[in-house]
Amino acid sequence: MAAFRDIEEVSQGLLSLLGANRAEAQQRRLLGRHEQVVERLLETQDGAEKQLREILTMEKEVAQSLLNAKEQVHQGGVELQQLEAGLQEAGEEDTRLKASLLQLTRELEELKEIEADLERQEKEVDEDTTVTIPSAVYVAQLYHQGVCLSATVCPDSARHQRDKIRVTWFSSHC
Image (cartoon, rainbow, N blue to C red):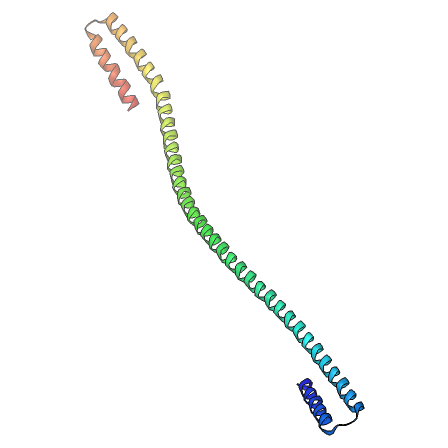
């Protein structure tokens, strides 16, 4: 450094002064110069120390920022894993619900088919009942009239008449 060269120069000057026994003025001049060099050296040292402290402070801040960033990355990774696990669980639940919905839809279709069959059968039974009941009443009335007529006209022919009515009714309805 230039400061050390200046110190060396001042020191050599002092030695030459002592050795040559020069004038007191030169000695003062050299001592003043020496003081300036030392002062400049102290100022440079203070500036270097200040810069070093600033660098150390910045390094600490950068290190802390790095630690904070690493922690955030770690927390983000943990959160990401939790979200992925939740997403997987939701996907599994969705699959289960879709399967359940499909099964329920099938069951509903089966129930609709059963209901339609029951309604069709009920309608058929209603139609049969509607047709059968009047027919049965009509046959019963005819039978009763025939029996009454046969019994009055010819007691022996009552059975013959009853059989004749049955045959007539069955042939017309079958």
